[in-house]
Image (cartoon, rainbow, N blue to C red; front, side, top):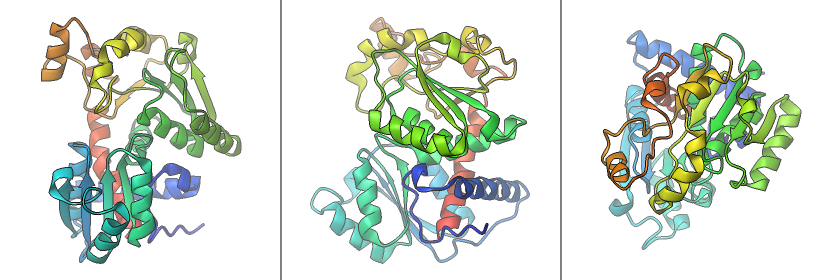
Length: 328
């Protein structure tokens, strides 16, 4: 079946069919191979995109900028302090203005409604670089990385998300796994209750694709995992919650013992990054001095052969390039 995504926004994987996601992954693999071969493209020649960042980033910003430049496009970067978006000018009015200047808009910030409104009013493709409840570009890169390192179809794999099972990465994984027929387990403490609407929507799609979506606090769920995934225990703006989060989530820290519990000698460790795996960051050092170990993964795991986090980080660029090429 032919796939045409031109003019589409990329707000959540729930907006796409399994075939469309498959198309984006195939395109990403192809574009990565071309870049490795030194073949420059011109698919975005004459295109201008704007990056709207309410939350800072390394990988997302660099991925969009390099990917766009690789294909001949031009980038404008606006951070929260550098524009009137949402302050002196409403999201609706800003979207209508930006839609006259640019061919595409990337948004990274807080509310999902903001990225939805940008798409609603701008009249051009809008791409979700992260919101409080979703991170679809990250999941596409994660799936690409799985395909590079696991010798079986995505629909035959099992992904375990460990730790804060209520964060945007856990929910984004539910959506992605449901769409692609992947067995997904949110492994975390019982006191963290997953959003009922997110769980219901994921399980509804899972019923059509053969996916399994589970929530568990039982370490027995680790058995047979192909991927162990985690994220930082306190998202941006939640630093005041760290003492409580450390107490609650330390039993779900990714250690070599946890990897061994999967029974899979080749289990992969993935992480969206940045990760607290040692005490070489200012934040980790500060909290250690206060008596809190905020590491969600041990340094042993992070630097082990199981860890493919830097392949994963690179694949942000290739998958984001695929999204822009396909929609523009």
